[in-house]
Image 1 (cartoon, rainbow, N blue to C red):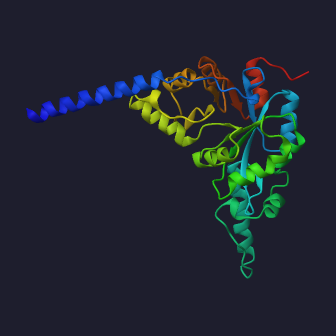
Image 2 (image 1 turned 180 degrees about the vertical axis):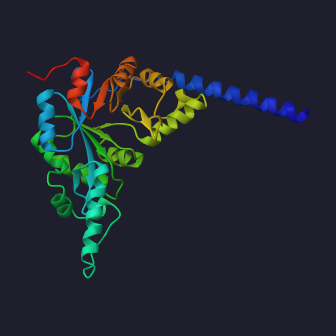
Length: 288
């Protein structure tokens, strides 16, 4: 009986602590984060591009489109744009090259960042460096999605775009929280998104009923619909982000159902890897 009473008392205490934590979180004031990056009309359309030609075509379709760039790093830390899914072709080429010439040792790295920019650029003929986008599109905003978590990545991204007026048109995004934190220490005036650890923490603490007290330092809530075939967020998290006056970017949107979901959640921005299709679903034609 005594053990049962202690257990009941412990549960009551835990319930009180959870309630007090929720009340404390709900009592915290939140202000809308203002930045020139959000100066265009909503919804903000963000499209993923891989080449300068794709960027030109996207801007022709929608002049104020935001370009999402998957940023990678070479051995000497040159930031360039390439989807991670394309790494395998380069690494396989190196393996085959070594098999064909066993008498000549060829360095075979496990990651693209183990190789110099010259070799990467030679293999991927139209792979641009990050700075080329900032140089060629001086009025365009960018989501700089830092993919490779390598040493000095934060320094090299800042260095690459420093001369191209990046402050009003750069949003830093990464699955790795440490990358965003490192860049933010150097450039607090840029906009910052949401890492996978952020999403996992929000989901976990929501399951513990203390979501309102959760620390979230991103300027913008950015999330795909799923991570490893599991929901990346729920309605409670979205409601909490609205309560905190965070702008919400969802995607990539790959179906009409996902677009309707994003609209029902009052998302500020839609991410896509197929801009013409998204514009069609939105009933928007090419810019005239």
